[in-house]
Amino acid sequence: MNKKDIKKYRNMSYFIDAAARIIDEEGIEFVTIRKVSDLAGYNSATLYHYFKNLDELILFASIKHLKEYTLNLEKYIESAKGSIEIYYKIWECFCKYSFLNPQIYNNIFFGKHNDSIPHIIQEYYSIFPEELSGNSKELLPMLLGSDLYTRNLVLLSKIQSDGYLNESDLDDVNEMTILLYHGMLIKVLNSENQLKIEDILPKTLRYIKQILNSFIIKKEN
Image (cartoon, rainbow, N blue to C red):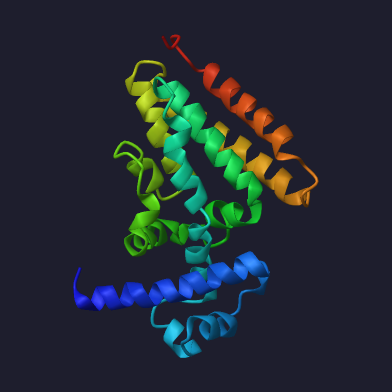
């Protein structure tokens, strides 16, 4: 990395950290250009050297809230055996942390600007590579996937290559699973903390298993 890129990423990190702090302390709806700039120690004009607009900055800051999920993922799957069990464990980890922070996860993966996510995820982890530390090389293609459909397809493709799914069924399994998950995420988001994670999490995982099991062509050993 050259000096210009090092300076760019360092300055971007100041703004991203500032926006993430405001999200944590006040809420995503209270993030403003002025607040972020003041907290980062720069003027507002400087922010626009690195981000197209406030929405893009908020997306970068939102990805920082995936950190707890990514850093705990390896621990979730360490005892899993086989691609199907790994698939379920990854979904368990993802659902747990997303249901604890539904607004952020919904903004990242289903928000109005989520078409920018492919570029943002790649650049974000260039700025904060340590947030992927501890994850195996096998998990990186999934974690660096541009959207949930891409991420989940990576996992399903492994299950298919192990002989448990027909390739022709991958898109159907993928779409059904993402639609189910999004519906449950919105349900949690709209409940305003009334739904208990210990109730909604096992139900979501049970539905995810039912979807996959309906397409399985042989049993996992």
